[in-house]
Image 1 (cartoon, helix red, strand yellow):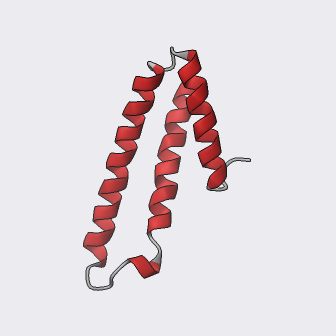
Image 2 (cartoon, helix red, strand yellow):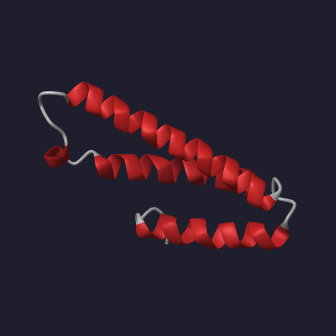
Length: 85
């Protein structure tokens, strides 16, 4: 169950990174929609790559040492976004 929860956390981190990119100063009014769509697609692709890397590294949770490394990494990232204490 921990392994699957971490998949959710990877998605949450992708959403948090995407939200940080949406600073009003970084978006042009002339091309707002296409810029937003491009950033969303890029964030979605990055999340997919990260999900795959996570499964590959941990062998779908079977590699206990790799799972622990990912747990620590994800916990630290979540804390950096203020999502986890």
